[in-house]
Image (cartoon, rainbow, N blue to C red; front, side, top):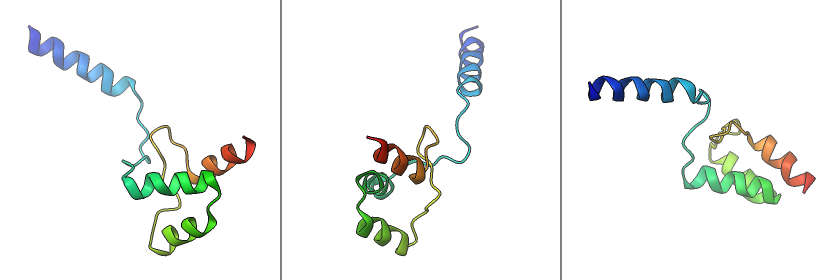
Length: 75
């Protein structure tokens, strides 16, 4: 009975969480990139993009670099 209950609960959690299909696991470089965007560090952002960084990446909540820039500008 326990394996069935565990499988049902796992399915409910996975389906109910509604993960973002386009989000990526942010490694150190991507996380720094979003921090650089928020800080307005244009040189670091340009360097990340010149090295082939993904300008459309999304963090776990689904926020793009544009979201981070806009939020930083409002603070």
